[in-house]
Length: 323
Image (cartoon, rainbow, N blue to C red; front, side, top):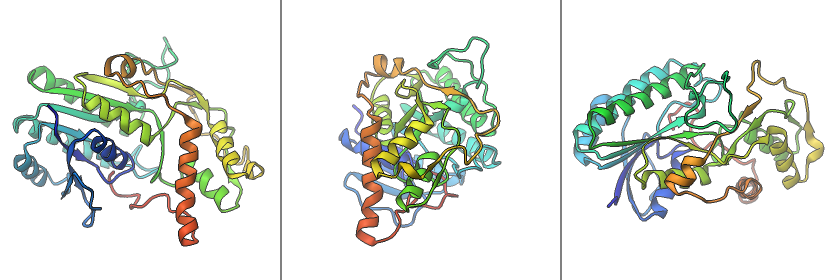
């Protein structure tokens, strides 16, 4: 029975809600962070380790010998991570982590991937995108994640006693999201009474909150499902509709400025995932409520403003730190 798990990236955008989701399932968690002062949380033992230091990660795994590992750490500085050389460093470190996990008696490893691993355009295009969609990322970030996924697959082939699963995340939002991204950029501007500079609002994306995604990943870890699983709602929503909903919640629809920013060149018009494996094989059937979780985010954003009289801080850690 799964009772204890090692979680990397536990203080990051995805890692923080994932830590809570694991605790919700009654698990004891060994959590890896680079922070010298992590919060005290019942059921969590913190380990301050730089995972790019291969000797340090080896020593940690040899000390703990975890049976289950969730690897959520990576380099994620907004606007930089897509093409950063750091992706190669994290790929090498992650492969090493997985290899040592296997040699120290590990039984099940959950990696965190991205919908950017999929081919942006395919001759046999399907919407929503299933896990069987062609894999051909156009960015160093996506290629590094895909290479790690393939490495985990090869580990399973050579070590059949080890299970590996891979959570392919679609469009996430939630507390701690870096300010230039869509949801926090609109939320910050409208909360300050300033214009929110928007693009066309036409692209369609599969939005889910980190709260919901974390519960889905915890369910995947605790299952016996292997291979890639889309962590998505299967619901396509225009980016403009997300901005409008935030504006309605804040009563500032007048501040949305459409067309003030150009859409990215070669932007993918529709990115929606197929959640069939998540729902039927993992058995995670929790409905995702976009409006409810945006409302929850707005409430969390307002709280520090109300208590401190300052603008809400949307990223509690350095944007240059790995999650």
